[in-house]
Image 1: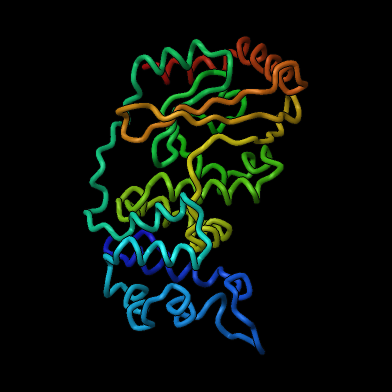
Image 2 (image 1 turned 45 degrees about the vertical axis):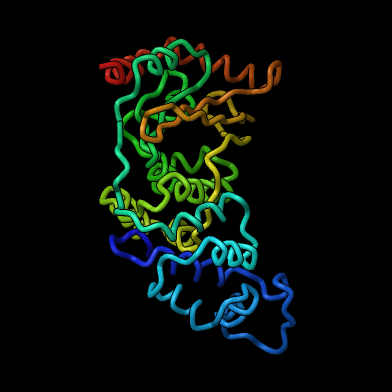
Length: 286
């Protein structure tokens, strides 16, 4: 499992991506039964134009700072997109883990914006901790509540899983986005603790984490099954908050005039008259 201080992050990533490549997709002729999943090390080296011994040193962590040209060649062999290639390039830079400063306090202006929006909206940290949320966001999903962690909720809370019809697709994207969010700070103690907890408790997380997929933190369409208003077809937007240590403002919205827009308006009306949510609201603004 990646995520331990001093671990060979670059080598783990190269090995994970190598094992996922179909040899035929890489232009290789497959003859007989292959005992090695994906590409062999020497095949990767040949396709990338480097020596097999040098590639072995990269996977074993004996050389952790290859040139950008070498990494870009490997990215082409593995069929990486721009986001994954940028992530691979970042792994060659030597820097202490966990050095990025965290500012977990949500700016006052953003809190005011949350309360003013008539749409579900919340703020999350780089680790997917929910730092602030408006009433409608919590009504949309109880897991969107300050103090919770969305990654932990999605994998360990059965009620949350029931809200997401496309759960398998959603968790794959979420883990890949989590890798992009934390970058090379996998040795950070809080990150290591969260990854360790989920790896022990959830086989799907353990499987997806081992793939080392990376996906940009971007908006996307999503479906949510709400117990009161039914199926919602929404768009989720993720907007970076400047000078915040990586915080994102997340907003859900529906196509104007659609059934989902009407259901979202109904949910807003229900949330506005729900006294049970007032305690959470006061807690958020304390």
